[in-house]
Amino acid sequence: MRFRLKAFGLHLASSACALTLILGGLYLGWYRWPGWYLTSVLHVLVIVAIVDLGLGPTSTLIVANPRKPRRKLARDIGVIVAVQLAALIYGAATLWQGRPLYYTFSADRLELVQAADVEADERALALRQNAALAPHWYSRPRWVWAPLPADPEEAAKIVNEAVVGSGKDVIDMPRYFKPWEQGLPKLREQLQRLEDIKYLSKEERQALGARLARRGLAADQRNALILWGGSRRLVVVFDPRTLEIRAILKPR
Image (cartoon, rainbow, N blue to C red; front, side, top):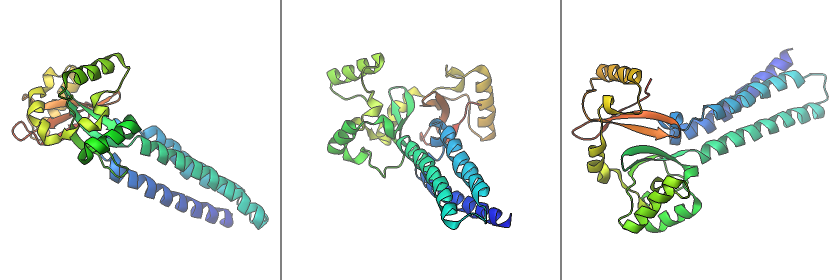
């Protein structure tokens, strides 16, 4: 039994180290708050953790028989490790494709843009036309302003295609992005009081108001906007004077 437990412990420690290095790097680089919440990556992490920290070491505990020929034992553990690596690669690739690239302000809302949202042709156009804000493989999440283009025809085309779902929205076109600071005057015009945000229930407004009060932030000023990430939403609270982000809060 000691042999089995030793093999189990070594396998568990190795798996935990590999998982921590990969997921830790992704978290520190791209998935820090609010990225991990808005991208809904928990289900991917659960699958990877079950396979790499649960099934893998447990399978080693089962097959690690000291009386088994070493070649057969090595083969069995090799198969287990291969399955683990496949799960880890799947999880890492999924997280990489879904990593947050931008938090955009466009028109009247804040929205998350993930790597998978920006198609290859748009990346190429952005590199040629707007290199400073174009996405690179090493790009970490940035807050940007995503206004419609100055050309009325091009702007109308983007809006119409986005409304009917036949084309890309401007937040998926980094060639049009501008520095966050340039959009602050427009953003100021869209700020709302908590009680005026229609996407919040009465209970959510009350809970958020209490949390803001505990932080010393006003709940009765025009200082908030919803930040969307798929079906999830957060409330971003700004300093009404400087427009510095003071808090990013869950509705509940």
